[in-house]
Length: 187
Image: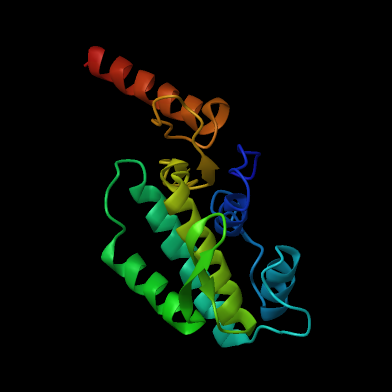
C-alpha cells in the first residue's frame, strides 16, 4: 500500500521507511540503482557525505530490506525471526562491525564501526537494536495482506494490529471474509 501509515516513534521510523522503499502493491521500488540507495541513506542521515553505493551494496541493502520485512512479519505472533532473514541480518551486522557502546544515559547500544554503505546498513540495524531494547520493536509490523506487506507501527492497545490501514487492507479482508461466508451459506 502506498498510503500513509502511522510513523514509528523516533528513529525507528527510519526502519519503517526503509522497508517501505518497496511498494509491493504498486510494484514501485525506490532502490533500483546504487545512486537511489546512496540518496536514500544520505537523506536518512545514515551515510556520510562522499560515500557512494555500488551494485553489490545495492544487492545487500535490498536483501537487508527484505530480511527486515520478514522480521516484522514475525512480530505479529511474537515468533522468532526466520532463519534466512536472521542470516542476512547477521551478515550485515558483521560487515558493519557492529559493537556495543556504553552511553551515559541509555546503557549499552549497538553502533557500527564500518564506513560507507556497510556502516549505514549497520546504523539501520543499530536502530533495530535500540528499538528492541526500548520495547518498541515488537509493534513494528508488516501488513498481513500478502499483496501489500507495507510496514506500519501498531498503536493498538492490544498490540494486535494486522493491516497497514483498516480503511484499505482491513476493509478488503473483511469484505472477502463476508463474501466467503455468503458463498458458503448459498451452497
